[in-house]
Length: 410
Image 1 (spheres, rainbow, N blue to C red):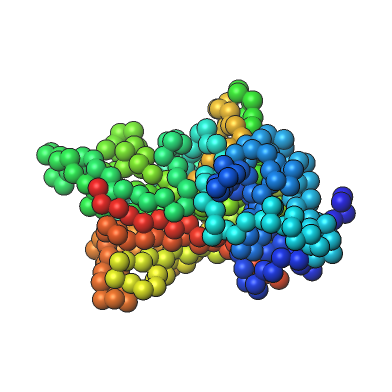
Image 2: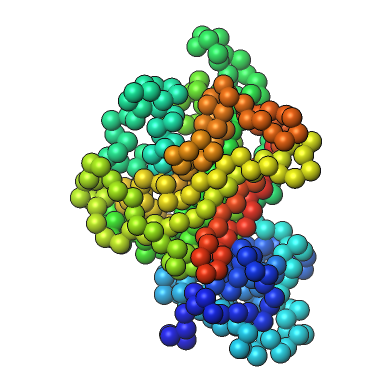
């Protein structure tokens, strides 16, 4: 198995996977699911099916944390074993239909869960275009970035207890709103927004008091998910000074159910972004993986038959790499644990249709989006459904699946 490469574009599975599917045999993302009679278990996606890792004897756990704790060699080995088990040349399951019934479930018949037990959640602010747009709106159009932005990956600590799985509705939050800076009211947010992000899942933990060098950071990262950092902009506006995000962010964070491993993303690496000024030495050098991942946001209102694309952007637009984010997070001696989640921050590109939030797409509500039904949106309304998608494209497609969430009334 040492010479077997799961990323070989020539590989095919004995399970039928349509061309252009998010989950070919070269992907094999890991997640957690529940099904009648099985409880909650770890699984792997292949086409429209889920392989039950407990039933096959590979991982008997309700989430991925026991696997994460074993480290990169174990992650690679398990992905190789699953790939070979599903390979068209391996008769072990291919020629055993009765065994297939025990091991494989249709994705439509299972309920996907949050894939890992999340101890801590950090969200960064690493898109130069996003930070520039926000600075132009709320600070100085001629000098939009704060002095520290190009020197460190800005971030904040969120609430892991409100990280929810794809498909879980989000109830419109209530909070203090204030339009005149003097007389707040307690009411449902009128400016509910989305933020198109990815997040990396920590695999191996680190020791308290010992910073993770930037050159070693990627070895601690298991893989990536899509993330929607829901934001109540009016609650956020009133509360964020002097300490930053709080109730306007903490009510919900949605993540996609399948973790796409860094190994699966390896064929889609792109150069890390040029940074000027050069970062301080603890944020410089080493192997810093960066990827070309196409990202899209779609919106479906109750009047629509089909969702409408409102944003297309790319992971490559991030200014700070994941390795730099993790190195900075631990630079003061803070530790990380298996299952910790680190969001990228809103991923916006340079063009208006590549802005990753409604705040930017509608320029703080002053330029509402025109939808095919004749409706407009400045921010989300009750009943709206938001869909995030992400994929890499080359000799084959690697996808993240959908992160779909509906907004419910307060």
